[in-house]
Length: 450
Image (cartoon, rainbow, N blue to C red; front, side):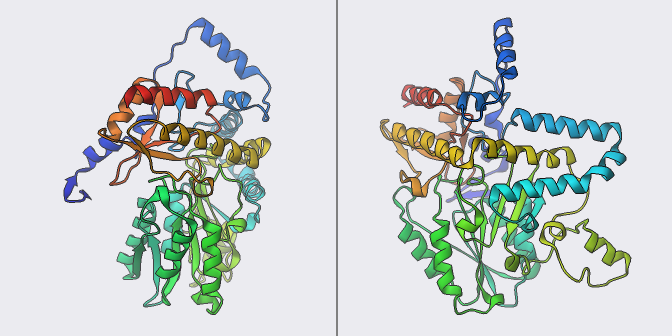
């Protein structure tokens, strides 16, 4: 059971209310395959890709033109280049599975890490590949080396995946864990308030701070750099193994912000690649600096040469040294066609320009926030300040429940979602597949509702 205040909500009714956890609200409506529409779609699909033209960017996706897509961040559609790469690798695996795998796996995964490193402004050797944000968070928090009495500090604003990863670790190892509030009201929060609450929350026994870059609950974008700067002062007089690691769930900033993990000043950045990056489904990564990786023990056996040869040679202690990119990447067999096509997703964003993607997302989100704030009975809970917001826009309407608004928007061909938290807000996410006309259509639809 999930508790909301004193009211118990069972799993089925919670999912029905939120319409977001499993992406139920983002299913596409039926298509009208008239000859005129098929012809227009074919012409658009055959046109050369122009990354400087937002209409051309939108044309790379097979999203239904009948819908306004404001929930792509739940689980994204693939652009043409990614779709083609998935098909190409799948065909190779279908034709000669063992041959294609043995001939390509090492080189293709190196290409993915290299593309990710170029995109992140980081070294490829610092990047481990995962299947999702949840997997990455679990690996970091489960593998973090803590001595008796040391703790992980998180916040009340993080998503289930962060909280549950740390809770499960505490159950297994009887380790300590606390949560703190970073602000009392998201709409009016300030950088000073957030940083001050972080610094007040750190204790001598704190070894890791778990935060979320962009909150999926309110759309708040944390000032990670300012938090990192505060931790620098705290860590200045600590030994290396007592330094507070800044661990960031970055999934709702990754792919829509023009900032590298080095710019953020964090020790770990964990993200799925199938949301704002529009990468292949079932892909993700962990970036960590070398000092931070040294404090994490692998959770899932890797298939790295180091680890396998240590086992073959009878070592009881594993490999003598660990390579983050190889020895922290979970072993086993994966959806390889999707993983290897991740390179094409990074190249798609690189072609458009990370700075242009960020500016476009911010511009559309700002327009949406301003339009919402002019509607009667609507309260925007996402900060208006661009420094404290990204692509997610959350709001509520007096007298109406979020799932009710979701249903009415869907009836007007607006694809949105509801925050999967105890506090339900309507959630919209403008992105590179959204146009100014889509924002206008959404605001018009809401005027008819409120």
